[in-house]
Image (tube, rainbow, N blue to C red):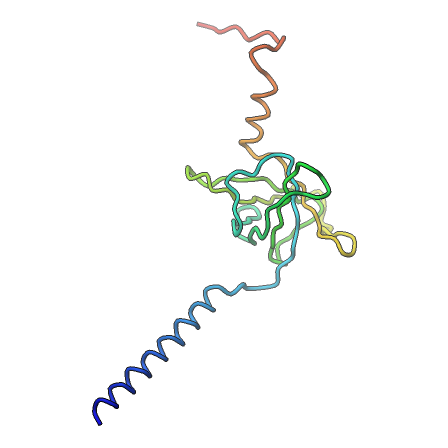
Length: 161
């Protein structure tokens, strides 16, 4: 009789712990709030950007990257789909850059706004609104470096001793 009681107690314990693990997994993976989809199109590469990468608006986490692929509207461009909290103030003057975290090189989407517009960003029916993607700091350095090479006709500045 005692063996059956121990087996019943062990079985009940396993069921309770299993239910708690399932509840904890659901709680940790749930998405809070309502999300809005936006798209970004980039003619340059998006090295280091992965699915589920963070989307930050002025440094505040507001969403995640939900898709990376090729843009059917612009051949050769990369299409990035993001999901952003509906409370984030995305307007017509909002723009995005590709930011990198520390020395690891993990990329994220950084959203910013210059305040020129307060009108919410919308798209025609059936389309996803597009946020312009500007080159980030590394992209600007790369553009500057390729714009002026050693063979350019511009005279170099004289070095002073």
